[in-house]
Length: 205
Image (cartoon, rainbow, N blue to C red):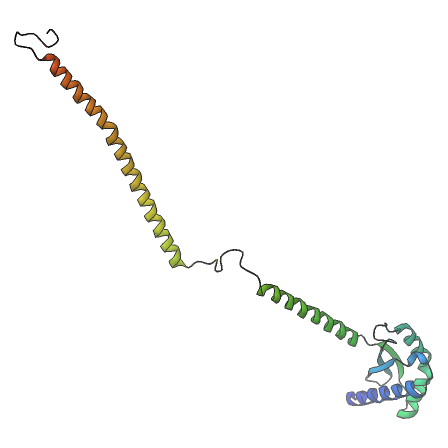
């Protein structure tokens, strides 16, 4: 049965040996900016995978990952021999180098979070000076709706009453001249029919 704890200890030891050898034993300038970040060994202790990162010559310069990978591949034999000598195990594990993308992913995530925070701050700044396009509280309560409906009903009833009063007044005003004219005609007719002392009417006189 494989000893997982032993595999972990061996992986840690291999990472230390390789990192030290890259700095002191292997004279390749392409490895000057290479850092071993982690190592894993299979349960049967036959294969070791080492993860590494590469930094650029300056802060703004991109890392030369291709050159670093080529340098590690060319130094693989020397590094494996040093691992076998310093670990003393019967079978020296094969070495496989893999570029570690976790730091780059973490850096990209930090940049995204920073931009998101800046965007949130800008939105908050704009919102602090903004005003409502409509009412401050567009949601009216049921009580307010009932009161407004009662007011509308009262206004409607008042308007109907005013219309009815206006129509009644117009009807009265229209009837008065006709009544006055009829009364005048009756008086004139009565006058025409009155006879004088000799039995003659005013017209005959």
